[in-house]
Image 1 (cartoon, rainbow, N blue to C red):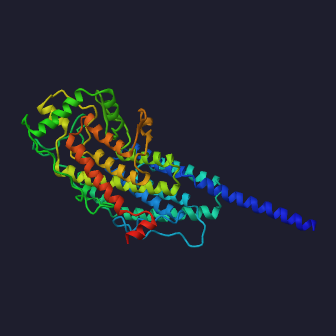
Image 2 (image 1 turned 90 degrees about the vertical axis):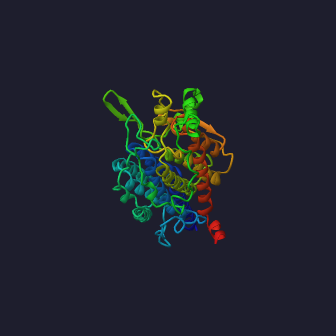
Image 3 (image 1 turned 30 degrees about the vertical axis):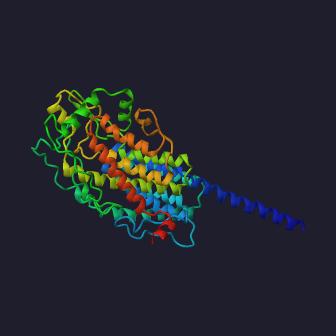
Amino acid sequence: MKNTVKFLVLSFFAFSCASTEKVNWETKAHDPEFVHRAVKQVTDVIVHDIFSPPVASRIYAYMSIAGYEVAIHGDAKYASLAGQVNGLEGVPQPEAGQQYCFPLATAQAILKVGRTLVFSEDKMDAFYNNMMQEFKDAGIPKDVFERSVAYGTAVADHVIAWSGKDNYKQSRSFPKYSIEDSPATWKPTPPAYMDAVEPHWNKIRPFAIDSARQFMPAPPTSFSIDRKSQFFKEADEVYQMGKGLTDEQRQIASFWDCNPFVMNVKGHVMFATKKISPGGHWMNITRVACKQVNASYVQATEAYALVAISLVDGFISCWDEKYRSRVIRPETYINQYIDEDWTPLLQTPPFPEYTSGHSVISGASAITLTSLFGENFAFTDSTEIEFGLSVRSFKSFEQAAEEAAISRMYGGIHYRPAVQNGMLEGRALGNYIVRKLKTRRKELADAH
């Protein structure tokens, strides 16, 4: 009898320990911080490598979709984006009846796709090795660890193969933008007089929209040097605004600058100040929102994927218009026709003026985030702290987007129509993406 009781007691404690061990590693591994940190690492490398805003958005889209396609296996209510975004066919599935750590597989997919699309692989490798060790230290069984890494790799490879068919590689060899003699068209601006960035971006395969022209904005104001013309009035508005900026307006312009191309000139030396891209800023706002509501790792990947798609399609749409209208920048126009000594608060980015890229992607991102987290979602944006700026607080994503848009006028780099019509373009695109992409199985079933 005593032996029987002793056996039952030992068996109970053995079962309890095994159960506790399982709960512990699964609880640790399911921490959404693994996803947030993986995305942030790619952002840091994007900043380091000085990718242009459109190219950065492409990186975010592919890595976020890869992470999402893995993560959804951790929650049955989420649906794949395969067949919903252009060109993405059936994604590899986990093996039935086998145990996986899907948060680990998710991080694997994000980091492998990110590593493939950036330049500084060594920075990705060091971070990757440390994160993998954290997963091992959580106590994940060896077979589960290896199986999960293999699955994340399979999905990453699938997404990387898909990315190779979007015309990006081919566009690297397309001809440079040719400067036109027309006084109405964009010209390189000081201090670096850089070549036009990504003049063929409208040839990149879009993700959710049908084509680069689907949300083509109203035409820009007709160019004129007549002081009574509408175009002159719009340029003069930027000029007058720039001369009378308040401290608050200066802070807003700097907070939303997000220009990875800022060049500093000291004598004969020129060097770049590295900053986060506009897309990176909105990806970090996504992180802020997720953490504020304690979103699970699956919810976080959903948010990152939908915002990233809004960003990349927003840039494709915006860049299509930029190189169609090729509108001259305020700095060039004002120096030639109003005040040759005027300089904008912000450094003018190296591409045509219309529409405002920040306005387009901010409008689209705000719509997407509102669909996920609701209207009147108050938050504090700490994105720019690491770049020497303070936080800013907003009552909603829409308020943040509106501030981001008007910041371009405060900075002296856009006329009003580029800001207003850019927001309209972005909102229309964002609403389309929210309606089209179904990330919940019930929504997908209802749509059919």
